[in-house]
Length: 510
Image (spheres, rainbow, N blue to C red):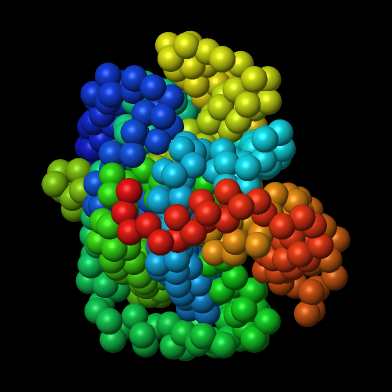
């Protein structure tokens, strides 16, 4: 390990120690299961906004988006960013306040709880099915986060993958298990700041190293389709590939996923005052637009640096920020420490998603399956023990799933995103905005959305051509249709359900 690597390691270790300190600090704030999983609905507007977006973006922001832009140009990365930005804003605008107030009225602390409470599902069928969906998609999703951390540390410091992955997982498990939702949300807030700093530093340093904006444009303009939004650059042939209407719509469909993301929806439920969600929406929307735009530009800047010789060629385009950080670290002690902050930002982006996923998966098992399905009545202390033990067990399973260092990270993220978006998104929207929706409709939407994800992914999409559409879009549409048809052909909601719906709709604040 050379001198500059040591200084980079110092920055990262300092960051990890700070995260562990936060977990210990908030350990005394968890007196009930509601505190552990929802923070007692005490989040302020800034923490709500930034923790939601940090837990949303994961390493996709600092590795995936720049990597796509570096490899194929502006089209795919830009349309993805637009879809995510629009989806973020609409989710905050339509869902956040209504879900916060409605979940307070129904006294729901998890998304599966809310489904059964909203539709007065006394048998808790919706709760159990929703919990199974969370387990199916979130445990592999969490495993991908552990794997990303292992690959990051292994690449930078030459540590064996399994050791690096386990150490990363232990840190995440510790502060999440000890501190619960408040610790996860607070660390996510800090991690969003670290991610922002990383993006800004890499952006500025990259422009300077590439010879300025004009030089970057000149170096990339010569690549066919690289700067176009309707074409993409194909590296193998050196030619432009078509990025037409179907591909654009398919890419924009990423935005639909937000309506069904449990770890984001929980932030809406946890804010201390629903009237403060307007502030949260503005902060979150501005941050997402700026950070995604910068991430796309970094990929383009990185290629400009390669073209002018300031950055050596490298195999994995998703490591473009890591490569720029390594270049920055060679400019002295201060810049090596700064490079460590950038790498901590990548680590932070993964941790901020993994901790939220662990809490959501743990709540699905301990509260929605063990608690509701088996009708166990536990004391407050016993419930907290079950919650923490469940989280650890799920983490261990995720570690085993992440054991293969060659496992795909972003393929899993894409599939899980689609799974939650189609299974939960339509149900959330109809539960909040259509009083005629009933439990049978919700069940039909949840099941059909999840099934179409698998069918389209593995049977339809491989046909190519017009069928090559991101599975979230057709699955989302099918789920919406299923909810409407089944609700209309089954019994109308009871009077108390309608009254509760009207109360939630007209409530200004809780």
